[in-house]
Image (cartoon, rainbow, N blue to C red; front, side, top):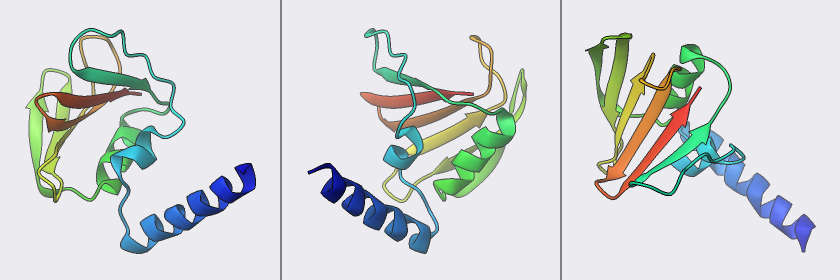
Length: 113
């Protein structure tokens, strides 16, 4: 059954490219998860730097994007069509750039670069 799974995954990828935007699942797909079990956030590790953070941010096609100032430099915040908030920050208390995807108060993804 593995081949069939790969086929449908390829089809899904094709759909994503057509619409020009990625889903959260596309971005966290294959990333190592570092969630420690406390709190609502699921943590993932990605590679790259703030440039990659912004690329992933833009790939989600957020609307209503604003620049934000953080103590680590300027970042971006936007909303997805389903109301999810997406924040790209150049730094965080734990170090590197972070993409925070806040689906709801109980469902938050943080990807560190």
